[in-house]
Image (tube, rainbow, N blue to C red; front, side, top):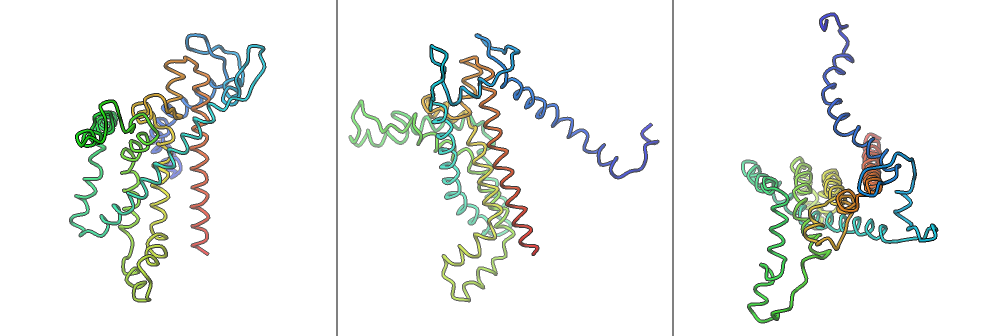
Length: 302
């Protein structure tokens, strides 16, 4: 029967893509549609949904319902959204500040040594993320690796602490450590293809090191920098493990808020609404990136 199919490149391409499209549809598109539908339903008291279509889950993000059934503006969830964006942005900047020099260093090594350095960068991915985050609890926690020398030197009393754990600082450290390989690798991929004779030419034209860096290296590494920033910012925005463990449940982010709504509050529609808003932000960033990349390519062609 397959032999009787017309010999069409479009048909053959469609058949080749069919398994991937089926997987994407079953494991990504269908759950997204279910989540979107749930976000417009009403919540049952102990989990689940009532099939009455309503926008109350989205209204709950901005307002709280009073005893007289009136609505009052509530900034609580907006604060969580703002904190999520702020910590994700700070983690992205920290990854960029640390990751760019590392990627540049690797790109300047002899070719036979570069694979070893890339391997060292990717080794943390071989360990479960939960285990790596628990390691930071030991480092930042009370009487941990950082506090112990201060306490030994008498700079901290028995009941005193530096307060590193369960803070925005601890969450930022965890996010930076977790996602920094996602910043290093794209930048390294861009710098590896960079013709460093251009940097030498800039030096021959009496450019300072800063001018060569800002006007030659940075523009040529820009695709890798943008890709790395997206790869760090987007997962940081929806991170769950780092805010939950290092923030101690006191510093909620969007990921922990979604988990709380499904597991503890049992408010499935509200959890679905938050997840859809997070997805909307992610899609917006990806669309803006794709548009910027397309415009930059068009300018290069002209």
